[in-house]
Image (tube, rainbow, N blue to C red; front, side, top):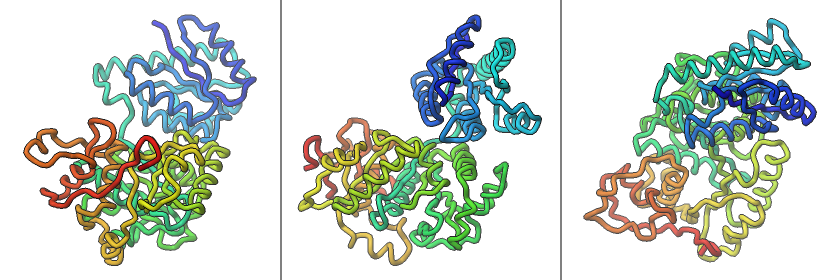
Length: 441
């Protein structure tokens, strides 16, 4: 049997050395090395989406891979793709590192400088383990594509653009369609999710920062279950405690939530730190909210460029959502796309703050009327992201046509249909305006 190997090596010289040795191993099919942790996870996710059989048996992770630390990357790969054997390449062969690598999910460790015999032995052992796991689980492909569900981060180009409202409504839409949902507030110094949902809870994300191994019991103690059924992990009430949440903690927290929920929505706020940068990096979809004005669009461009410089997220992998859109808006989504280089959401959110004011002041965002055009737009966007299950196509057979509410792509649930998930009958007409393929009209 041929063993497929995917190396993850950032250094060009080290990559050549690894590739040369792998090409000498019998019955192996080494792939071209990926240069960073983001590309590794994206590559594995793409292969798993096509078919389980496309996943490599072995992944080699070099100790100097970035931007995610090697052990954190191994932990994420082991959690999301448990049938892939991961081997760490490192110059440190100490028992402490060996134990840490095993705890993270590695199946072996190869020391630098690389030797043929040791590399062949570790690759063979990891490949045999991978084949055994796949044979044991049989045809249960869904089990092997990675536990848990979709992670979506929502970040703001600047303060006040509607980041938290967007995150809350995306979570509500997913929950209303029957998904298990976690909503995380990683706006560590100014998180407002608790205020929007009228929640007072003494536990926060900071309480998990010092926990090395987040067990289900520990996670349950830190999470507040809202009346809507959404699991809330709130920002600390004392803003200074936000410094306790490092990138390593954020990765563990998001991974733990992902393994227990169908959808994880993370409010990352507008200020970039290690924690929310880690969340954006590991997310399945990263949303950047902006408003159609010069200041906000310039801020969005700065955020996108900063993410790219820090290897957090590429511009083309970011989805830009335009909030507070009006007919008189001079800056159209197509122009924002050219300026930022991001993908644009297929829907724009209208500037109807009066619809929100009552529920915002009351802290009852979850009670926003289903006829609200803002809610319909955001729930339609949730459908675009794949966070909600499409309703029965027979549901509208005797009802009104979707018309303008339908997404541009067939098969996507419309904003009106999504609103009906929460309310049995929506008597209001849909007022949201979708961005056209041309100039957003």
